Length: 87
Length: 127
Image (cartoon, rainbow over all chains, first blue to last red; front, side, top):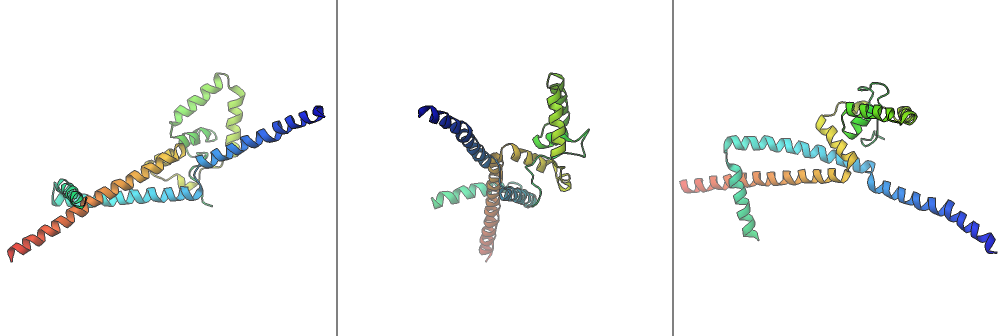
């Protein structure tokens, strides 16, 4: 009885169980590693938005600097003062 | 479906033969010459039939780079090379740039509101 069952069990483990486990982890790994199409488009859009906002802020900062060269220091000190008041 | 930016493409415009090495350089961000020299060295140093087979199969199977991906800025190209290598880091970079924007905007807001209140005080003093 055992002579018949043991090879069957070993064969099923070798040819079904093992590839199953390997393929399962391969798909898991792929899913974790790569971005989906939506994620990729979202990342593209966010990156583009960040770049444009950065450009606009630079323009505004240039205008303010031309108006008042050390505005940033005063603004920062004011912001920390505000923060101390609220906390 | 639009073309994906994280796929491998053959770079036909910068190609010497089939564009596999140029595509590989474009995909990873390595120098094209470095990739070509590396492949040739690998072929000479014992990988003879296999690298050639891999090259031909890749050149045959992989699709060409879509036209709209040729005219992107170098900065954007670098960004997508980073995404291909480590998507998580690129997401963190984008978040960091948004935080930076938020901080700078807060400075501008503080400046604008403080000048407004200063102006109001001066008007009040003149009355």
